[in-house]
Image (cartoon, rainbow, N blue to C red; front, side, top):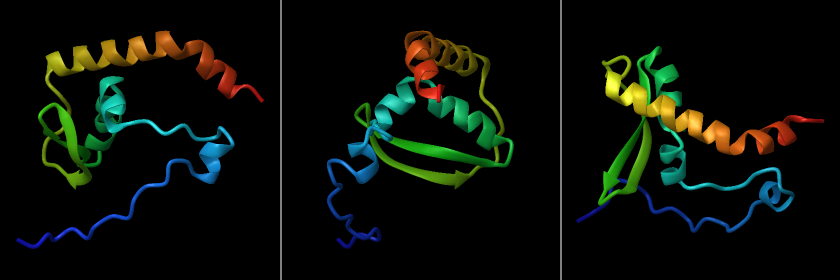
Length: 102
């Protein structure tokens, strides 16, 4: 069977930016678990777009942008999203403030 997707070259362990502490690589699972995927998709839904995560056994299988016909999330998803983002901010506020200072 042939794959439509071209094979990807191996990812480098650290880029020039990450070596200088400007970029800290994170996983897609962490992005999703912090609630940031929900938050970004709320904004993207306004324009009929979303970042789609295809999950395989509770792990991210593929991620891609997509056009969508739906807008917003149900109440339960919104409640969970606000809680996740609030927890992320509470746990990282000091670091975020420090990073924002000149």
